[in-house]
Amino acid sequence: MATIDIFLYILIALSFFCLFRIIRGPSIADRMVGIDIFGILVVGICALMVIKTGRKFIIDIAITWAILSFIGTITLAKYLSRKKLNE
Image (cartoon, rainbow, N blue to C red; front, side):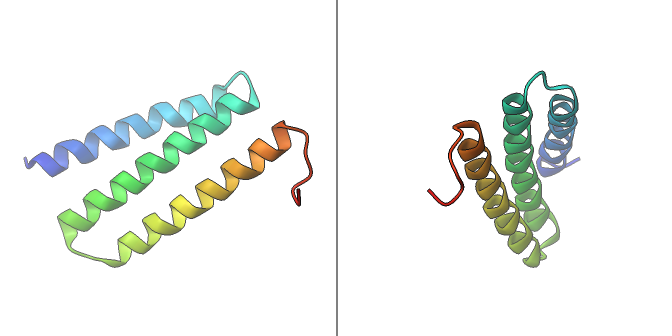
């Protein structure tokens, strides 16, 4: 088994822990942190899949996921600070 496969399985296992935090998080901020970490793990999984398979379009998926995760984090931060989204 290659080292990339081991790292891929580790990232997949860690993503299940993040899903547990997203589902069982005691507050909305804890759930958002879980979603952020899950997004980082998905980007890492996509990067490893590019290395393993050589299909470069997967990097586009990772970049899109990272951008959407960032926008979601900014939106939640605005919501938690009780400001309007256009400020």
